[in-house]
Length: 229
Image 1 (cartoon, rainbow, N blue to C red):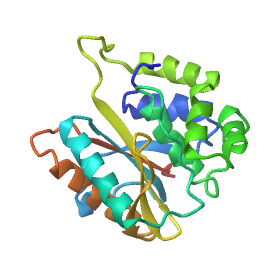
Image 2: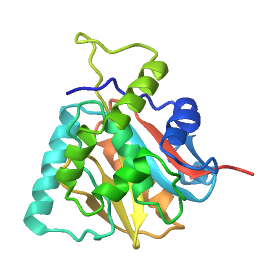
Image 3: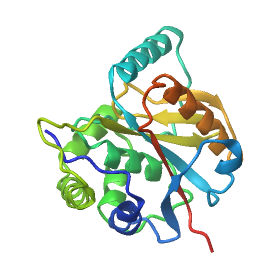
């Protein structure tokens, strides 16, 4: 199964997709223009999550395999409070990333009634694999994603020009920085952080990912943040 890819277009995500998911208007998706520490200070606070959009090429696949092998060998601690689902549908990574953003910040986001709130309630006791299967069969996600993906496209992908980008979420939970990538086998623990230093700490990890593919400049970062007064 494959969906049309979702572009990192805040205008589409802010006013339409977040609203469909039941996210209150006080929260928005904003572009992060630079990962330089001085520029990160301009993002409206608080920031609940960061989303990295990047190329999924051989460099990404190699880094993914090496990272997972290292964790399987040495182990890692992952909070039981982390909500994580496996991506089973091609090109659904944009919606999966938003679900990860919202699901792991329900203490801050007073999620309105709707299909996302019901989905999170129904799947809270499931494994990541089971959540991925439930997501795959949820027609509300599919319909909303498809509508907004087609509206946001500057060029509709084809078999000759397939999408190659991927969305990944970064959050802070219980004093730890986590990377939530639905294509990986598990959440990635990137070490200690705080609510105050989360943005800068996540920025350092994103820079490492970018440095893994230095010839590519097609990286985009967005933040789920409070609206400015």
